[in-house]
Image 1 (tube, rainbow, N blue to C red):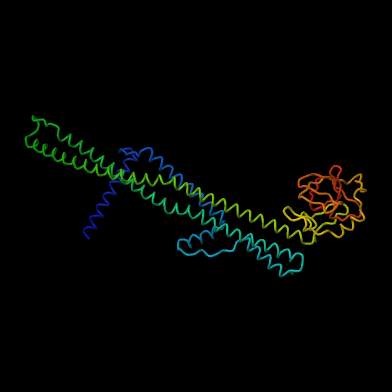
Image 2 (tube, helix red, strand yellow; image 1 turned 90 degrees about the vertical axis):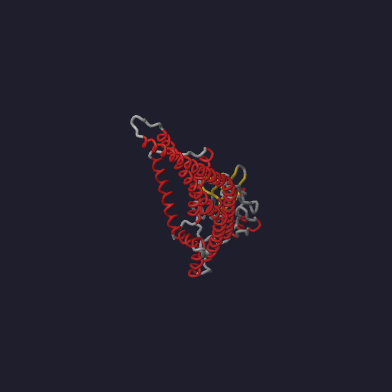
Length: 397
């Protein structure tokens, strides 16, 4: 018990002397030992790394999980060292709602069957999102968190020790300086005309005591200098390890970008497949364009192919086949008024000689003729002429 009390008193004394030294340095009343320029640069670089790593980590968390409540819940699960429960993504939930609604509306109706298809692809998108979140959390967030909660805490601890060793060194320097001043004052020759012999003896004794105090202060300074140099070297080695941290974080960043690219590629493929699925459904919401020659349906009809789809998978339109036998394209003349410019949205391969092949983004002239299927127009490009599907066009004028 006595040992613990003495140690506690000793620690309190050291703390007090450090506090006094720190306060005097701030007030400009005490000298401060400066670190070498290389170590100062390493410290500044480490602080910069920590600050930006923390910002990137927090914002990545927001990107992967925008819900603050969910992030707090995941934080507590991590601190309790428990497995985070699997959470349904918003896309999966939307897909489930769509499929449940289709059951109520009737799976055989156009709306119900479309809801089932769209809902299934929404669930696939949600599954891809969950896989991306898990991959990013393991390959990117975890290394950043390990640095902030592991390596950086070790660096911070050693830096605090270095600061304490510096304060101890400066305390020893100040103590030695005071002892030397006192020794010089005590060693000054006394004035025998005004000083009694007894005082001279006391003065000589005090000079010897201060000499011993100087020797003791010099020894303490050498010990403090050795401990400071040792701690500075340890801290320097840790700070130089920041370069390895940058290399590791660079690798993790590449993995994060690859996971993002794979996720968005997968999403793009799902949406392309969904568009192909929807193009096979009956065009139940096309607007009759007998007067204007325009259809309101922006999606390509099932009689043509989407980009990436096989042209042989297209089935001919019965009404189009009927028109081919009765309508001779070469005899069709453009009306005096009613022609319009149109921009081609998708590539289109003509099924027969009565149709006109199209290239995406090109401009053609279109018009309609009496008795023609409202889903089709007559298109002209230079000397070429033929029928074109309305849903592959964007009418400009």
